[in-house]
Length: 100
Image 1 (tube, rainbow, N blue to C red):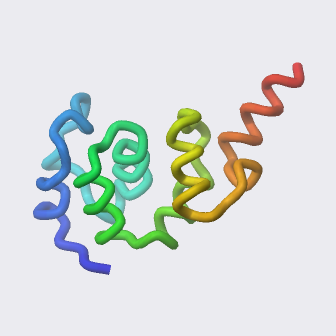
Image 2: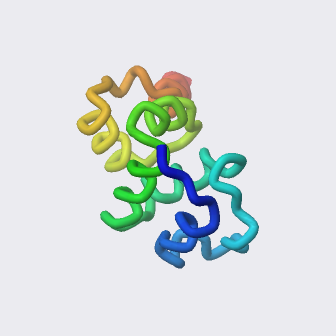
């Protein structure tokens, strides 16, 4: 895992953090926030950066815990991480909400 805190964050697309001061993000403490933004709104180079920085196993650990992920991102993650939708918290929460 190659982590150079502000240098890595600085390489991410500016549109990802429209509502946040990017300079105050910490690559460790803001890991879930960074990963979710990149997965949902990032460009290919953003995906490459988080993959290089965190690795697929860490992205997987974080992503399966998200409360929400859009359907396209969920399908991408299932394919890349070789998981089923049911293994994601967001999918199970969505399904339980539909049953009411």
